[in-house]
Length: 270
Image (cartoon, rainbow, N blue to C red; front, side, top):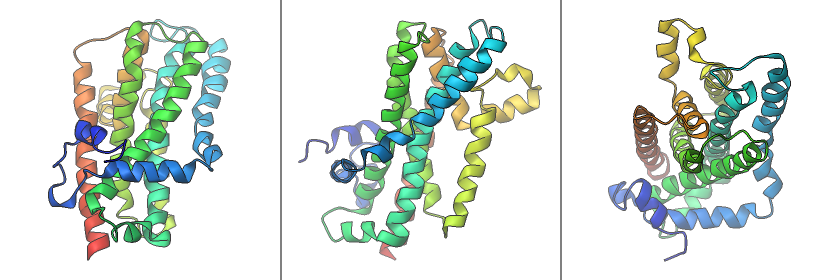
């Protein structure tokens, strides 16, 4: 058994979550990706800078021209939203573009199936890897928030575990969606889905600016729930309603992972 094998898998889905498709050896794939990317570290860290630039330009720069938002300085309000965006970006882009390349061109998964790995191991392994990338971005961004004094509460100790959940949810759904992609042009749909979530999920302003119907629509978006959780933790505004956000993201991740595994089984074994 490898050092990364099983514990995280059991934590998220359980040993038998994928049944006959496997899943217990997902850690082997995570180790494989670590070995591959140790020479591509610049690619790994590049995605961290986009939300950082937004924080410095909009949160700090534009914040100088605005007053308090929801009772806190503007940069303090924007930062937790961009923390959720960091987790989303790292997870989604690894679980979409990289997975598509492995399936359609490199045929990496076909080679893996010649080993004791099964489809469930492959699906969960790359979901966990994409999630890990999102957590790396989030940890770096959270360190910047601490250095800039943008954290208000000890509840923020739970922020990094929450980014794990956010990353898992988006990585799983990202891989499931990628399994339906036919060409690179289909990835325009990924951008079409991510951009509205980024702009309208409450990262930059409260939902109170919208009417009730629009708020209900936005509250159905997954990024909103990640932002709501992280903003409450970093600002010290914890309440029982946050459990709904946790449940939403957990169910999203579980369903996405199961769909991804089923789709990969169909693509690789039929």
